[in-house]
Length: 316
Image 1: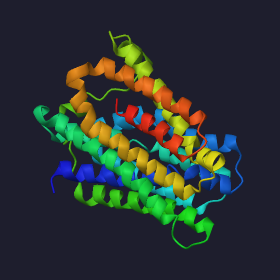
Image 2: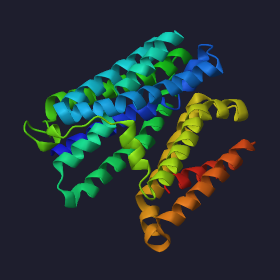
Image 3: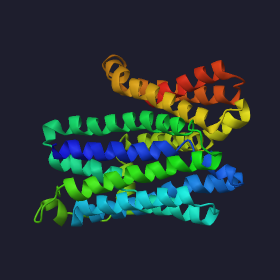
Image 4: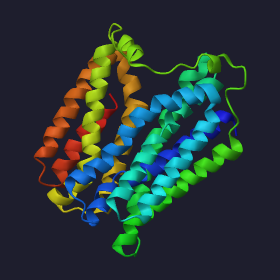
């Protein structure tokens, strides 16, 4: 298998673990009596720590190479899932999420690895493979989680098992990095000498570039909306429609499938006809409509219409 194939496989395995537990973290935490603010902290701990650690890991990967950082990241993710699967204590679970966020530079470093090993004319295709791994992971992960919750086990272990399996997926990815993935930045590579710390000055200079600032703001608001949805959707389905965690996992799998179909097939056909700007605007309108519809959902048919609008818009 080529280096590109190996790193895409690693990303797929990593995303399987992440998307496997994403719909189940809130029901898992609620089963131990955690309050809503505690569940919110569990979700926010990961991106907060990743925000701080991401630029640092990126610089380290430039200076010391991609492989050491990927080994560290995968080990931290595996340890985090293992702790989540075995713990009942809020503080310990919060620490596990922080560890995962602080070591969670694996996807960004994997993208840098793809850029290292592909010539410029093939780089877009390589990044497309990473995107394909994302889409497939977000379909298969929740689907596997729903199937695991269908096993004839005690409820506590049905909720714990997906986290333990996610730890297993991350361990497999760690072994692949350790044994099969060579370094993409050899000693003497100019990228190592040009490694720079990401600074607030550099961020501000980038945001001030023509057209970049509004896109950054739109991206921030879109991710904020998705993060709010991600953290509350399973509990929303439980309290509004009486769905179990298993049904929430299958619902996430359906969202992932629809979003992947839009991103992988529909968008590239629409862009030449309508352009990126119009599609971004249409996507934002659909997302807003989908969320507004979710606020009024009273049954499965209305839910299907709202989340279809939302998932389709994510591709824009």
